[in-house]
Image (tube, rainbow, N blue to C red; front, side, top):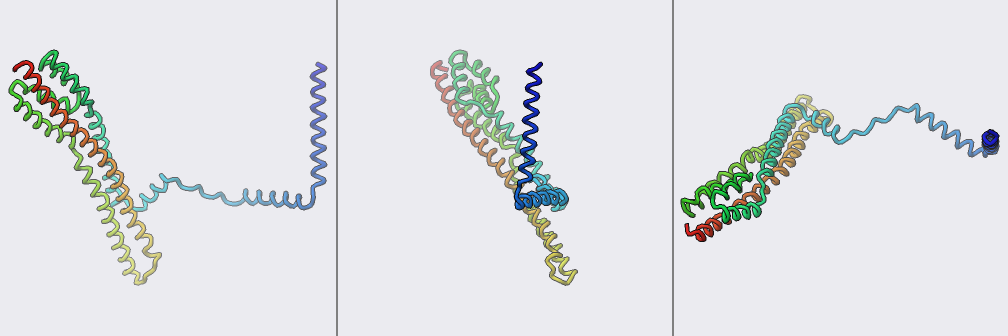
Length: 269
């Protein structure tokens, strides 16, 4: 208990000594220092009474405001092109990714099944594998008993069918890529015509009279180009993915015909 009182007494003495030192320092401040303190206090009061500055707009808000300024007519159509184009692009990307298979592994599995269990075992491997390459393998194996030439024709014909499935709806994306900037240019031209009509009606070339209309007209072109750029990126990715899958299909077709030829030669069929 005595120890606790001693600690509290020491703390009180230190606290009182600190207060006295601060008071002495404040009394010995030079006049210039007191002036600086006064000026700082006045500056703080002025800052508190001044109106608060408006917060800076973010990119999303700025883009939204510009879109609204462009008008609901052409801007709505341009936005519709973006939504439909992105919907088709996302659907194609998902489909193409699901259609991608490891062709080397599939070819090895089919060859092993063909050598161990025959045509039916190889067809079973193809049935259990997703993707256009497996479907082409299945069609070739299904016609193998009719001869190598018939099997090759079946593979080529079904390969064309699979290419059509891969390229389905891709042309709509290219349409939206071309349509979005064209709509933007049309909105700009119409906006310029309206601006010149205002000049003619006023009979005076006043910049403030047409500046707003010209700015709104140019916004449609800007957003049309933005939509076209976004869709063009997705379109190029989809085309590259289709080319990759088609190349895999062609290589797989050649490999399948070679496997069937070796199988028939080995088994003298």
